[in-house]
Length: 563
Ligand code: DON
Image (cartoon, rainbow, N blue to C red):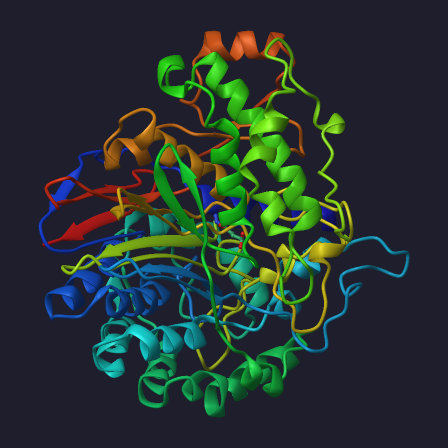
């Protein structure tokens, strides 16, 4: 019974990451000055408003992050974390890591029972699942380094939305209703989202406690979250359950500026997120692996293209599982993982007649080396500064716990660690020592906020949620544009597929890979696994005339706005 209820909860957490609506229009938009593509129309509106008021892309990104925490509670957050990639109009690139970290009292075996078996529900639900949130520290750091507008003005739109409420979309009403049982179970004293009658489209969702927390953040900056009343609420919430996060954990949290990773693909410079996200290195390794093959001539999702992409994916994800973790705790062999020659050479071994079983693909050994829910948004401002930002609570609605009195959700990011070698996490990913739990360590991520340059100029700003599928979705979107000539909207609307080494199967959206192609691939030993939507990709392409062409994923309520 317990297992069944856990399976149900896992399904709910995971499935609402996938979402279900393909009915939205797929029209591409073009804007002259600035554009914002985000998962909720009101968040996109807030971003454009800031751009129109003269804010730059970073100002808009901060305002959108706080707005999403209000209008998109399944992933927008102040109780989670994320990664931001930035490119200034004159080509300076920077990466901000505001990933959650393990609390000081955490331990590598904290989710194991007395017999050493993993109790994965503990890393997914309730107070113990939460890592120390990084979002507010991240936004403050971004503002200090690149912001131009008054901090309070950037938090103000979110406060207004939380206080006055906003009308929920039909997709949101369905999601809120689907999760009521879980929310009631984990929040016995209630929360703004919990109510007895069913939510419906157009209902107004007000969050007074969240409004007060945001007011403290507006007035006191990072101290409004990591100290004082908000910190008190968080620590009390820990005591209501089995949590271990302390005041010191909160006070000591720091966002970190890191050097982006980069590589070349068919003459384009691809810039992305370094560890503790695996996303950038894995994306670049994938692009390097397929570059010698004539994807354009073979055609979109053709038999040969799928074979090559899947064989590349299984090899890259095997390396990810073994070698990647928080670089402050574990030496990640970045040079080797993104070695163009190595990645191309190992593809030579693939057999076009037969799938390589994943059991035969082991992570590379390097000499001298020891070993829904997330959301993405893209912004380009009138100067050409660009932000690609992915932010998350991990599973949909994170740990499912609203911090009482503070009105925001805690993440369940601890599940992104490898709780035990070989035990799959929510996304089926396995890992080992590199991504084992340790106090103050950041859990490995797949988030892949990415920016692509062409001939030294900004060309594309792209990213997506989707757990382990993030990397392959960003990869496909890039090839959709560069190899298959799709516009921004087509590139995100196109169907997607995914392979991650283990389990040894190709996950496919309904519309992905035509039936006859699937048949011939099955004959060669490939297994297919039908699933719901993969990712919610956002994309902005800078056209040769300087206009901003946008793609908002029709799988969600995602909307592109601009001016
Ligand atoms: O950091 C990661 O890779 C995961 N926590 C991301 C989770 C995610 O994308 C969920 N969205 N559907």
